[in-house]
Amino acid sequence: MSDNMIEWRNQARERFQPLSEDFLKLYKMEEESGGAPDEVWHALADIDWFGCIVPKKYGGNEAGLFKMATTFESVCSTGVVSFLPCLTALSTAAVVRAGSHELKDKILPSILRGKTKICFSATEKNAGFNIFNIETHSNKNDEGYILNGSKTYATAFDVADYAMVVTRSLSADQREKMKLPKTAGISVYLVNTKSQGITKKMMNTRGEGAARQFDVQFSNCQVPTENLVGKEHEGALVLFTAFNLERILFCSGILGVAEFCLQQATEYAKQRSVFGEAVIGSYQAVQHPLADVKIRLDVLRNQVYHVAKTIDAGANPAEVVSLCSGIKYLASELLDKAVNAAVGAMGGQAFHEENGIIQLFELSKLLHLSPISNAMVLNEIAEKVLKLPKSY
Ligand SMILES: Cc1cc2nc3c(=O)[nH]c(=O)nc-3n(C[C@H](O)[C@H](O)[C@H](O)COP(=O)(O)OP(=O)(O)OC[C@H]3O[C@@H](n4cnc5c(N)ncnc54)[C@H](O)[C@@H]3O)c2cc1C
Image 1 (tube, rainbow, N blue to C red):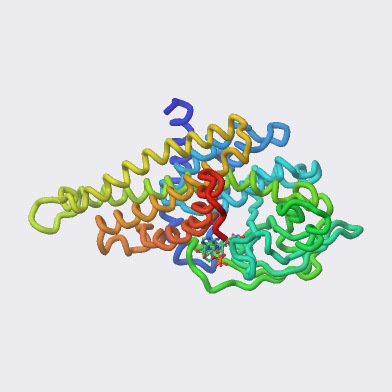
Image 2 (cartoon, rainbow, N blue to C red):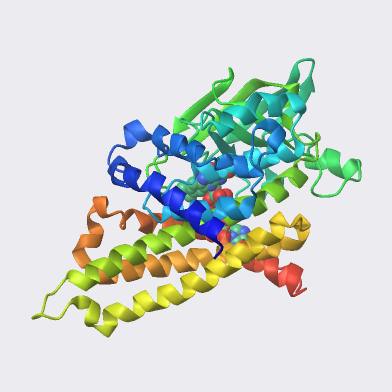
């Protein structure tokens, strides 16, 4: 590990460690926190986290995804676990790559200052993981674009300032008649969450710490021309590149969360005695699951860093997509094992919310589905890498 990297990681840990205790308490204060307390955003701005992927001419530092990933891992290892910053980074990357100059001028400086949160809204009830089946549609008019339709599972729509919304701008029939590829006809917009024509309803769900999920309805919601991200009908191209970055950040967050579980459990196991003098950490039944997590964590960390550096070096997004999906698959399994090992070592202590472990059970299940389902990762590797026939 280079001196620079150790410095970044230490800087992130120092800034976030004091927030950790309060952050864990927020799980009990869902109504107030919305899963994205402002302190977290101020701290991210202090370590210039979003600047890593923003060009210097807009105030960024251009340090790249590797720095962003390693510092986010460090942040999550303190127990401060919020994935809304990753969704904001996803949109930031999309805007940097394909946004209009007006949009970049309008939004990037305030993202850098930790003042703007952006959620992501693609999922629809009838489409599920088949994003090409979405029905929310956008039409051009004199002032920009008009959006109509319904989304579900829009995480943190209540606290986000903008949502990156995925729509159909050409129906499947129109696309076919125009003989365009399957990926055409999708458009992506940065929509102000307070715009007229938007109604949201909180869902009765769990899974992402204190962040809440929303059903969102767009009824003639007007979006300014400059908020289109990428070319009209070509939004899928914008998304696929940004998804690579999102997967790396989710993976680095999972590395940090697994490290957090390991630290908590190991410290506890070194001190707790139940039968006589021996500490429970001296029993192999407690040691081995922790050692197993340590091995997997170190190996996966190297692979996540490798892929982040490959992207920084300018890899073609299409060439790294399977690598990004593959490490996300392994990361979700690592988190399962880390949470199980922590519960195995900590026993009843793991169920105290302020210890920050029990909440991670739900998160570990969610990360099997999100940001991409593990089943869809296996489909992708079987078809694109192993060249096996498509199964669905
Ligand atoms: C807590 C939470 C937060 C979320 N946050 C967001 C968000 O912020 N923004 C957003 O856009 N979405 C979000 N989602 C949505 C999520 O990313 C998925 O898109 C959504 O959960 C799909 O759900 P579904 O049940 O409709 O999936 P379905 O498509 O109905 O799939 C159901 C099951 O079948 C499997 N399956 C489907 N097709 C195949 C296939 N071809 N091969 C093998 N298996 C298959 C899937 O893996 C899954 O296990 C969130 C979801 C949850 C639960």
